[in-house]
Image 1 (spheres, rainbow over the protein chains, first blue to last red):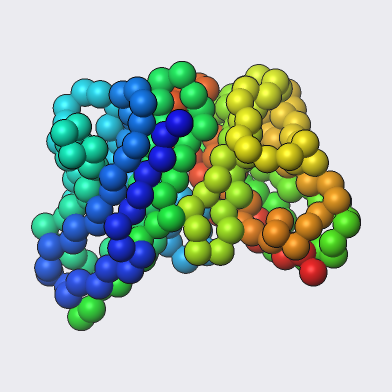
Image 2: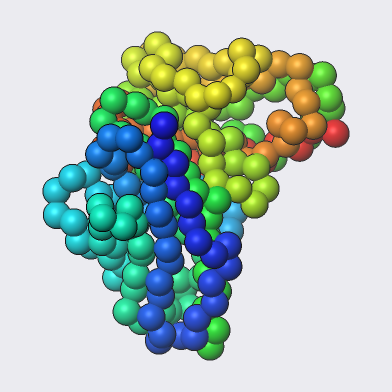
Length: 113
Length: 114
């Protein structure tokens, strides 16, 4: 079975500061990894995904994530936070032979002016 | 091109009742997945439908059932509602039923069970 753990249910950064949201996965087979963002009263939007190609994945809105097999991690980063980045972020994992995508509990990002 | 839509937006039911939630997939998408998102948690996979057949199911009891129609829209039915069924129900559509294919989520239906 696969699962993800998101470290930190709340992260607060100042506008312009680095954003780092942590995600560690557990999977018995090579995983596919995803980051989604959820704004209030909206569904989830895909930020980026890792599907066994390049380990550094670039997504929308300036976000990127690096797949590190040795650390079983897939942390999400953005060099400079904007007020509009304030939202809930979810890391998710699936695998090649299973449509059961498993989500982490989420990290709420607050951006201070 | 319209995105994924869900109806109704909000719903209040009492314990023991039955509910039907609806989802219209994005144009051209033949795969629909349903998720339950309890307050403060990440979404949990309920099941997926591909070309009108169930194509994978999460750890949910049989009182959670679904349908997919020839136009690829979908319904989620929940019988014998329990208080713990209160959640945001999300539907997501994708072009093909592959784990790597991007899922496009609707805004969800907020179900409250009293």
